[in-house]
Image (tube, rainbow, N blue to C red; front, side, top):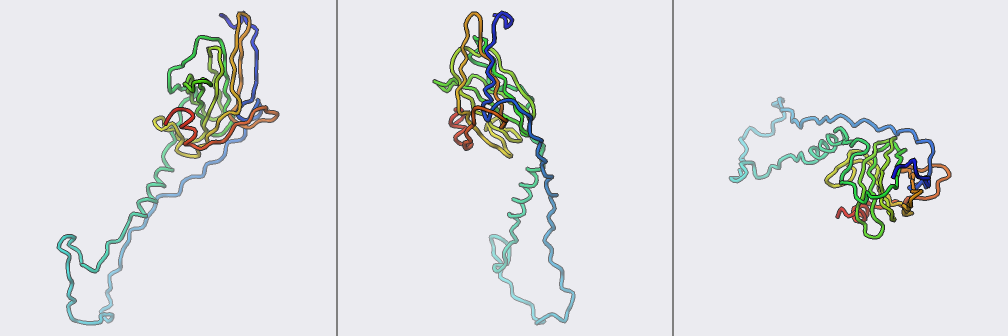
Length: 229
């Protein structure tokens, strides 16, 4: 069925926080501090006048560690942890191109259209599921200040969840940095007949005069609702 032969039922539901509006300005990301750690050094004592005794001290050695029994090694664990955190924050973020599918599209026998607009300064990950069975039918990435149109939805009711953040991990299905997770407060219904079909438009950011809000959820709940865990 060609779109030109149908009268489209447009619904700019502004889901997620709501309808179309200007996008917020990108937030500046501070540069990570340089990874610099000074080696621990002990200055030699060259002043012979500081010597308390001319006698040779008796040192007891541990046979297993080959170290003086009363001596303790200097721990560098804290410095290694700090270095790892600085190194992670300085790595380039994994940003999937807009429209990247993480699963093969399902429920594609209809003409329903869904346009998802990401007006945030962060990347996003959108999951569309059948409302009654929670089966995933679309899983798509949308970069910051971009949009993606999903086509051929079969008639039925669907729920939408999404995440925003930086540095996407496809295996864990979560963002490594600045991750936030949401569930839309309204299901989408795609109906059609011989003369018409539904086209929905949703936004992933707050906009003026929007009619649906998204519920902020934890990462664990996001994984549970989307069937990841």
